[in-house]
Length: 73
Image (cartoon, rainbow, N blue to C red; front, side, top):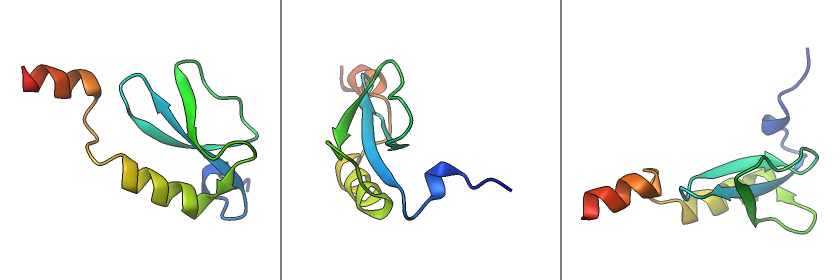
C-alpha cells in the first residue's frame, strides 16, 4: 500500500498560503497549485513537524479572509 506523502515524517515540506490566508502543508516534490504560494520552507523544504508547528503558530484564525472581512464590517 502506498504511503500518503503528506504523512511522511521523513519528507520535506512547505507551508503554503492562498489569497484567503488559508494554510496548507505541501510536499516539496509536488508542484505548488495555482492560487497558492510558499509562505515557509524555502528553498528546499523543512521537516514535516517543523512546518506543522509553523502553520499552528501563524494560522490562528481558520476562517477565510473574506469571511473575517465581512464580519468585521
